[in-house]
Image (cartoon, rainbow, N blue to C red; front, top):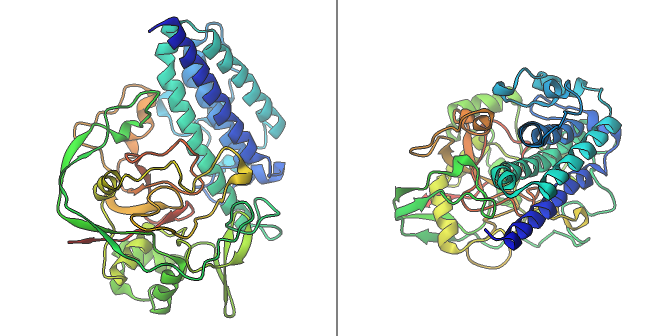
Length: 439
């Protein structure tokens, strides 16, 4: 590697580091200190905690082992802001993160600044060997922070929904729009099907590099045998979900998995999360506030149980994650022009948009798409040694895979091999449905 190549790599990493870290602060700017402290359920973390945890990640896994003479900002932070890394030590209970009133908002801001100064110094001044050794972990830390940027928006939406005063994350916008334009459409275009031949198909990747990042759970690359199948050319819409509700979808046990039906009964579900009915009017909460439902836009905030029940009702099924990945590759789907979270918050829709155009649409952005696949390791997968190995591998049980990304997923964070995963009852994430069927 030449000196000029190392310089370009260093400058690129510095630029990317600043951009990702700045976006986290941009996302927190519309929130008061009180907003950033709240925790509305155990699955939700306070915004202040997200800001601190992502900083702790860089301090723990990069600065402490790699920057000579570095001293942690506060030794107590390791207990407060460790998420689930058993190898690193004990941690504060997840369900009680909202009780961490100290350190204060201002102290967390200073913590982020101190770690940023040290990280920028490490990247700018490190020799070639250190940069080569640390760059993969720095890139992991940046993608880790992008995951938390999405979580910040998921979590604050749930927090504000539980309040009684003002449920808008940002103001001065029409809910679910970008650049002030209405997302209302006269109606969704008719659903059609795109057929794929199947056969022996390559899945996953072995190409994880700083220039082409992938999490460990996306590897190893391997081959699967797929029967011919078809995918719906767009996502399931609000108008279609209304028809499911009107046909007794939430009251018909025969449509549901057993655990799903038990959850419906226990939780009293009768519509997606954040829908609200007042007389004949049905509204939805967006990050721009509450507004009427738009029938043409994708339904969002539904669980795997709801997605599976809807698919049964529609005479279809959910696609497997392998069908989804193969279809995305064959169709040439790209996240480049998707409805995702841009660097400028003012340009973000923060809500799924109606499909437009023809062919296989909305494969990236808008909503995470539930699949029929359990979250399991790929053949020959091995968990890495040390705490970093806890990042994905130990969660490969009892969860389901989602593909494609959402309107709150940061730009530059998505690819066809990306495997997101949640428990089947969860629905505060931006999750929706694309139908599949056999051919």
